[in-house]
Length: 304
Length: 272
Image (cartoon, rainbow over all chains, first blue to last red; front, side, top):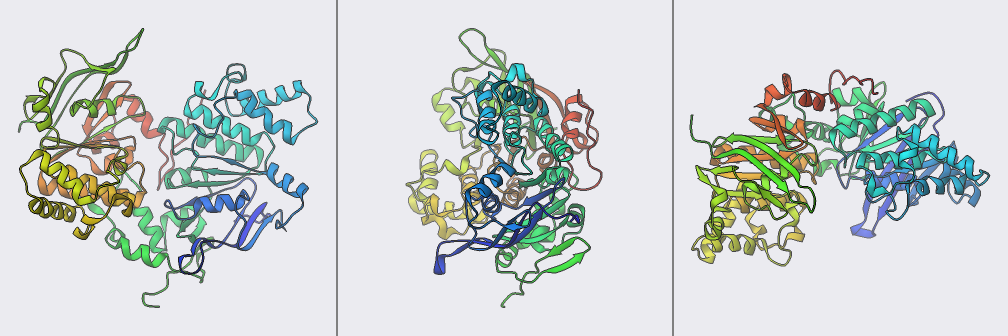
């Protein structure tokens, strides 16, 4: 990772649902750091704990163990002002552009609200100028889009509005949870390019959560593979993708649609799906470094 | 050349509106050979699902198949079938797996009863024979026969999807239509299911019409691929040709917008 201090970090965070025998670790000893101007991709299948990690960052859940560090300081029972500052620094873009905008309000209203709440000093005309600037930034025409309602826009346009809304409060961190999974191929790339531009121009730190590893490679420098609440492998994108070390990462990668490989030349991992799944779900406390910026949690041997 | 199992000729489908009609499918023609896996790709709204529904005559108003269109299954025109013939035709000749198929099982019936339902409607069968056949079909999709007494909610999404596929295969159809069968599933589960379909169609000899927007997946699994754009079938070719040397400009642009997993990344075009 980079040498600069991280903006946001999770330090050995665990989140447990249920009690006793039925306890489920949605996050187990999860640690990672977000740096400005960089994107970290979090990949895994549904139920692996990706969204729990996002919710921990958004403070919808509080960790059962471990700490959330914001600009180096733990954010536990912080006072109201620190929480407000945190909320304006960390914003989220959701998966479904159809349900994350209020159908009863115009686009102008959606972008005006965060400005009113987080920058109460602005006058009406300053706010209008700020909205126009935000829309231009996400490559939409303010004059056309501002008075429209969400249903008058396409999925891709709506996702651009979600991004503009997140940018309205000048955040330092954006958490994007599957932002393109509901969009068509040709629209998807526009959103990914927009995220890349925002990161470069505004120096944002991005957490990109997805199950689509090819798009993760397009936007992120670093990647984490999550399974059963644990981050089983992480490091520099190409190191992990080209030389995966954890059996679960190998299984996941061998199943990703890849036009260069026919079904007939399936990897060995696909024959042992159940075994890999079962063993990868066991606690894996040990951390092993496999390259300069590439780590895994080795699976315990069977029978241990 | 053998006779195609499905032959679509000059298919025109409109959605009738109050003032103007929406032309969803504009003169599409293609053939599927016995045992072939044919992929139909395109973005939302290009008409690919409309075609899938039309082939099994499941389209409903305001969709209207215009005169002059032909859909031949094993040489028989599907569009001229009366109700009785249609009932016999579905499942037996053409079976369909829907996008949300895993939610299409009846939640208050056991898996066994859902098999029995189909088998009893289409064949004269006893409960014992139906149970034996259901157990046999479940084994085909790698599910243990003791699941027969389970209810759908006791099975995972991937398992439910495989059960639906097993039910579709109950009457040995000649053609299986799959409309985005794995979009709601994880990549690993998706791979397991499609790998199974690929093996089964080689083993049992049925043809597959596979519809998806995931072009990479389609190249991996299909023999031939048709690319649709706004109601037109703009390119039909071998899967490898579609991937390595696409002819139509739209196919080229589709590939240019798909990030790659390994090797050189796609280049970002200068956007206007």
